[in-house]
Image (cartoon, rainbow, N blue to C red):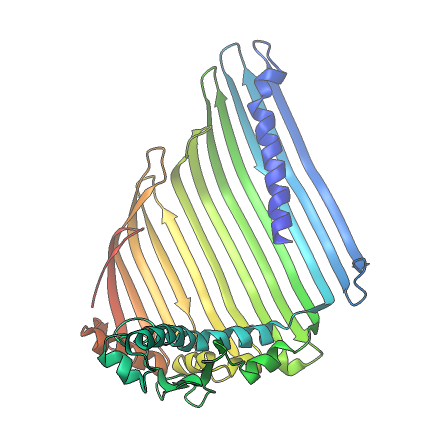
Length: 451
């Protein structure tokens, strides 16, 4: 629905824009002057409800409800003046304003169980190092056999005689050890460094030249598709725009000035839930209580076919208490479980308490920026200045006096950072427990100091 709102807004603004561009073709006579005013026009829809089932899909059903939809222009004022050489058009627009309330989509369908799919992919990824190493070992065994007319007894025979080395990928990964049980098998066994040290061995059958099927993986592949219930809800979406467009056209060029006095886009009460086979313990969910984009005093100008020059902008993007809840079966996957332990998550929920980006461009050359990111395990604050070089190309933005403050809240995150410092032989600058970094230079490739 968000995409629909933006599309409708873009269509209306594009139509008005193209109408004004071609105004001198519609009214070509010298001395033309036009004043056009439209007030309170738009579309209003209430209590919309539709159900549908796709053809030849008996188990699919969809139910969409919409309590209220409004699309309106509070005011449109056009002032056009033209002569034989030039045209000047001023367009004042209050809108398009959009309000959507009470959006609810409930879908039931038979689809692949993505939880099982994730478990399969992760298991294959865990075994990928072992399988790649075994294939390399098998190739070395064949060369050894050709040269010596016998099979090697151990992996060490291949290493000593320089048929293979553990110094390069993939054998330099010591989460697996390897054993030659020829002429029957080549076996990879997880070591204590492996994320699952007690996992099943990976066996390669020397006679058939194939890997043995992992029984756990085989059983997962045989699990049928799930009956999913998807519930998507949004309490409210709103958009408010107040802008002014000045067009100047002569025989050579179309120039424009754009001023947005105010623009706001807001989403409240967004939630999404996916439940497989009516099993609430395996449900996934997403919740976003508030998302807001505010823009004030946006001013830019240019000519058709060129990149505009931005003179001023004040804007803020913010969302609060964003939460993703993953199924317990997926949370118990070793890699995810280890990550959650590191960042101090003991349930199935990942929460972002606040993400906020604020920008103020004072003029076309300078501005300042602020960034806040807050979670239960990590807090990041960034403040700084920037300069912008605009010359009809993509702006070259450079950072100045930009400071990053990182406060690792969770014990696991603090421990991970300390281990990183020991491994690299470098230490972060700190004030108390807060890490302080500095950023300077081009936004695309900044210089980071403070460690």
